Length: 86
Image (tube, rainbow, N blue to C red; front, side):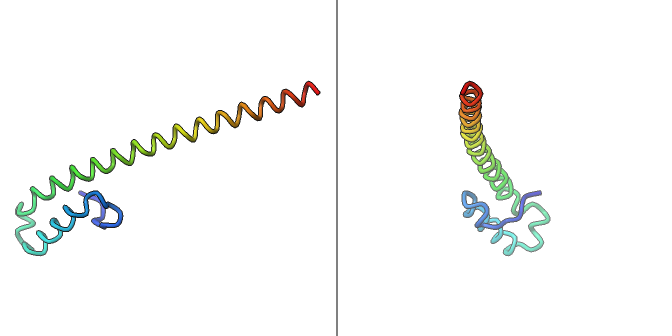
């Protein structure tokens, strides 16, 4: 099973999606008997690569956000300490 084959959501796999959809249109019965299986395998690999890239990018963004949050907490705790001494 694959996600919805919308090209705008999967720009990396757009070419394979188009070929896969064309295969399904060209072989309405053959698609049930393995006519497009090779394309399906390529499409699954492409989706996995795309997901890995997104996951890596999200992880990097998360690290940046956590660092900014840590810095913010340090600043606010320093301000509180300054106010308590004043």
